Image (cartoon, rainbow, N blue to C red; front, side, top):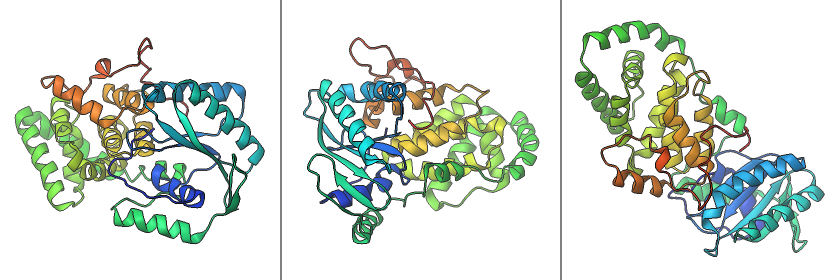
Length: 341
């Protein structure tokens, strides 16, 4: 799930809609079902194409939790099944269209696509995916300043794994320096280093990276940097915390990976948010990671977070218990769903 922050895209044909999918998701989908919103306040969602009744029920549970809040508001989506099996795409697309209708979400179109062809499953119209459509959509996103999509979700995840040995060698020294310093001094340095990155965009040296990673182990210091993560600064935060996540050894990676997940969600990139959460070590539960997981899993719009924070200015960011929930529905678990969600 992701809300497409700041992205305006004019799509005129089914061919162009399919060409737009990688740009909406951040990677090229394969064996997937994608739910494309017809207005900007509804999240776009992608899941691995469910192949069994149990899988379809699991997918529906997550979709229902995320989309129910938009029921009854004349909300609608387009359903695109990306698979070689056109017949199954018709079956599963119709099933989810009916289920969405049951919670007040309409379906404007049902499309099937493989690597080269597309078909409108309602009208029967079909055609080839064209290079001109791909070029037009790519040019539109470049002009809008959007990053170009990864080849696959796997390659997107791999992009967050870098050489972690140089920083690992400097962690003992950074920890000793922090012990001899004061929390106030380290907080002031971390905020100043963040502002320096905003100003010049230069990647941190190994020494500065080690010091920052040690500093944000402290929740109050981490929270000061998180408070800087407003809409205008999310792009810079994504760049910084992507680099920190790539370089951070296991023992200090929970904080930067969670910061990257939060910034990615704020920036409308749900796929990157999930890939960042995958980098949080499994043996180190981290509450901010749970908050981001709940936000993405339930289709929460970033502006809802801003409203919550404005109501609780003296509290830290771990406000999961204050997230708006649907009437009569229990708060969704912050645990990560299946990889494809």
